[in-house]
Amino acid sequence: MLRSLPLGLAIVACGYALSLLGWDDTWGPAVYVGFTTALVLVQGLLLPDRNAAHREFFWVSLFFLLSTPLLQFAPIHMDHYGFYRVGDFAGTPMPYMFALLVNLALASSAGLLFQLLWQRQYSGRAGESSALQRAVWTALPPVGFVYVAVVFISNVSVWIQLTILMSAVAAVFAFLLLLRDPATRIAPNDRQFLLWATSSMALVSVVLAVATILGIYVLPDLPRVLPDHNLLRSWEIDFAEMGFSRQEALDRLNLGYVWHATLVVAYMVLIVGGSLMVALYRHGDGNAARP
Image (cartoon, rainbow, N blue to C red; front, side):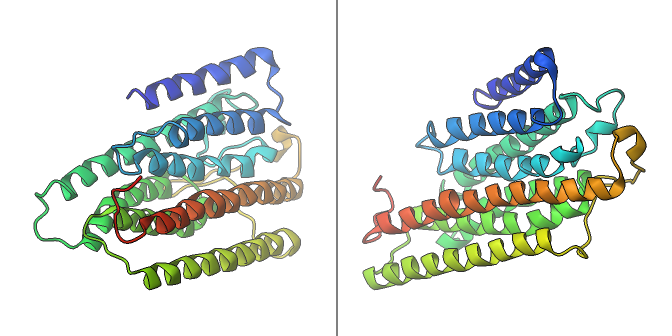
């Protein structure tokens, strides 16, 4: 509560401040999403709770992955949850405010679940489970909870992307917990191999991600998905009221995807992947408790 409540108030205050200053659909969404996401990342990455086993890093990473799709749909003045359809929200900061608050609620709830599962798995009450089982049962359920929620309230393009990204997040944090587990011992040769394998995987992932981004941006025949549905219902978008045609909306959506995907790749490789490599490097002779 001491972390998420002030952040929620900051999201609301920033939205109203931008509204008073004069909301501009050209730059407003990018400034709003960028500032609030940076605020969440700074407090989580620079001021973590050292006794919480990657809790802050975990939930701010989920918040980042949930919030960057807002940049994908910002060029068409919409959000991927459909809040732009509510009342007179269209053309105001309100859709982005509510979307960011939803993301904050989902991510911080996942962080709380992560913490509770970690305390249970490593308190001695989890039976004779292995280090791998403890790590998996701590990291996987919170990610699954967020993913299931997003599947219901977002459109298909977002949850298809999150299928890959959240699988990667669950795997990385399970591995981080595995390295932190006192029962984990890695020989120097094995550690060297894991560092090499992680570096190679990161390089291959970057190449594939860049090729995918360029392919989606360049190839005109690939299907584009507008925010006109979720798992529960669908609706029609009045492009005449929005001031641009359907084709122009798809072109803008394509440009927004490039910005969104580039930020996600940079975060996943530099921050998440880099943290994994640092944890491997520091593991040394298996003394996982060493800072």
